[in-house]
Image (tube, rainbow, N blue to C red; front, side, top):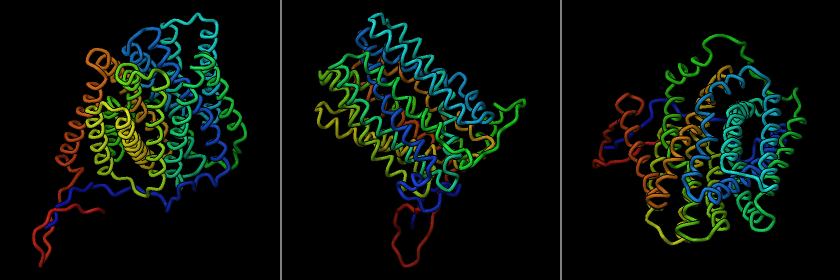
Length: 433
């Protein structure tokens, strides 16, 4: 007897991807190079910003507030950003958003270099940056389909995650060096300059080689259309739900890492950078593995999520820095496998004329959940200790994953099948489609 828990919807796949297949496309190569520069600069600023707020305010709660303020605009009007992505030329939108981000980084750099920066100013810039990101993110996600077409979309999503994690690997190390040598203001200056990369690369993209998608005309009810679309499509709805649950806690890890570096390992800004580098190495590995995957299943997403929650629970029990770094490698890999699989399922399941809004909904839940989880984890880290924060970050998603899996089985999205095999003793196992 073989027992299996299976997703009722068929797996979504693309055609025999190779790890770097999308890089054969000129437009995507330009885009990827620009994103690599910009992501590295953004991580330089992310580490510097967290450390700056921690230094100015003296507590992890302020770091969580900053994270929340940057995520809040996506939660409030992320769907508007997706509607802009569906209605407007995506390359023009991206040129505008990248320029705006460069200006905001320059503002913070000026405040720091003139030694006039205050915490409230960082809060204001974080919210303004989040407002730009609310438009940039869904547009950039949808633009990838125009760069590579549907056959290479799955691979390109994995490579985008790899590029992001490459920046997460290099950025924290560079940020730590800049903070400890030239001063924290130069970290923001480097980020401002890094936006020249994507701006110049976007200008070189050839319009005639793009896979043009439908430009949606203005009309009533277009924001509600995305909500209705997600509600009736299980391959869109459930990945968004699961990512939202995990985003609430597990994807706010940098908030906890800052507290670990300061209060548990006592390694300062340099140690904080090392912790983030370990996380990025694991994430880069996970992203490269995801780029080669041909299938995206809801069952796989739930299984990866269960493993990720378990890794957090184990890490909460560790007090040795070396062991903690090893667990961060695992956490990073599983996090990227989870988010890349969910992202791919949502994008590939969405029609061209609504993809921008659907991805905005995905990102609104993904990023917006951090607006709630960031301050909560910051409060736990500050008042109960960072290990308590890690414990909660693993326990709550583990429980939520179990509940969602049970609900899927109850509602018919997961199906339990029992098969009797002749001439064999009863056995318990899992069937993979």
